[in-house]
Length: 410
Image 1: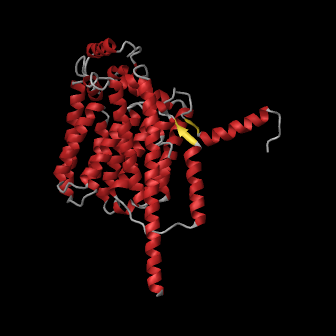
Image 2: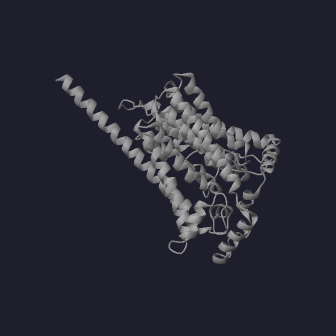
Image 3: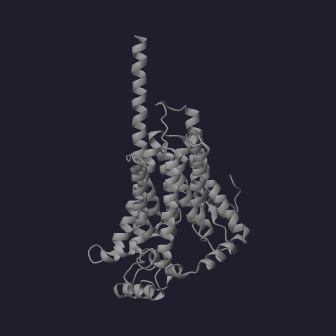
């Protein structure tokens, strides 16, 4: 009798834990979706005046230029759904899709570092805390990575998987040329997820190097000219006179590489700015590294796998040397790392409830981590990109009001 009772009680507890997982995932997805829709509505309302729109509307209407695919889709669909609604809607759906993939993956085997990743101001919440980062194409690169990781689970052939990545990132490269670096990370993910012989994997790496080189040549040769950019701007202004009141992001299309390096090098001389970005990078990475620790054994089995990890990490670190908006690249780096660890090596945990004391301490840690800091996607050199979160602002504001009223603080 007692054995039967134990079995029934265990099954009941397991069912309760499973139900709490589903409820937690559902609430998280709905909450994030509402926040993304609200941000998308703000982006839609700003059309076409802001810097974000100057990036999103880059198209081929004046001739082929880099980063023009998304804007071209908006340009072609403008007469049916409107470029503003079409592009803003696509970004919102992309954010929701990435959030859904991440939340479901975390709640399948919920852990404290996984939950911290979900509430991190530098990951899923980053484009919400810093609205200027919302209307960028970065989420399309993150979505490409997430979808390809999921698709690779069903691909049995190494070369078919590689072909899928070439196709997906060939399209992503037309959205933004920096995706070629994240293509390398995707290839590394493909190789780490399989046990093929080293010779086959080296051939894939060689093919990946060839694909990167070919895309680099294509980017240089098909960069577009100043006349193409001016014609594109004139075409949008014929439809929306407020578009491109300033050239905005189009200046980056014709910016010489040496000028980009000078900007990055100049920012390094401002120690406060560099230290702020570094602190934001570390704070964002803490839960991802914590999450990765439990999965590290799967990748350290051979020296070749460690080398692959180094190659993948190096590829997604490279953008920090190309441009000065390091907050964005912190987001892109850790989002790719987070998705890699949470999607490629799922870890099952027993269906049991945590102890009350542990649950309360974990909840406190989650709240403090999520609300005490933020990192900006870009600041002027000399400013600090690491800023207080809403909890700190509330405490400081309340304390300041108390001092201003002349009353003793409680």
